[in-house]
Length: 142
Image 1 (tube, rainbow, N blue to C red):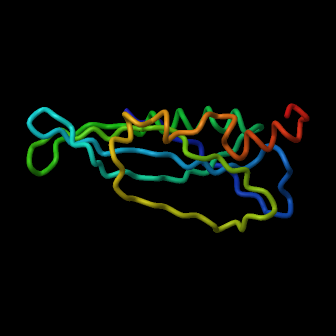
Image 2: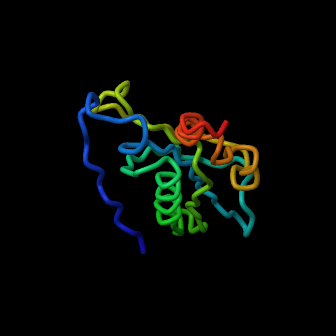
C-alpha cells in the first residue's frame, strides 16, 4: 500500500530562506528481475527527484527515505518473471534556495551493476548530502 506524499507549497525563490523550506531529494531505485530464481547483475535503475517541504535538511532526508521506501513494489513482467522495484537510497538532497527557479526539475533512468548489493558505495552517508552538510556548516558544527 503506497502512502500519499504531502505536496509542498511552492514559494517564490526570493522568499526562500537559507534553512528549511523546499528541498529536492534524488532517490535511487532498482528494477531487480529474477530469471530462474536469480537476479541479474546489471539492473535498470531509476533516479527520481522529489520535492519536499521540511523545517531542516535532516527532516527532509527522513521524509525522502519514507517516501522512497513506500514506493517499493513487486510484480511479474511480461515473461512471468518476478520484478522487485526496490528503493536503494537517497543519492543527494538539495536545499532549494534563491538560486533555483520555481519550475526546475529533472529525471534520469539507466543501468547500474548490482546497485542494492553496492549500496554502501553508491549511497552517501547523510552528512555527505549537500543540504545536510551545508546546514551543518552554517550551524558551526564543522
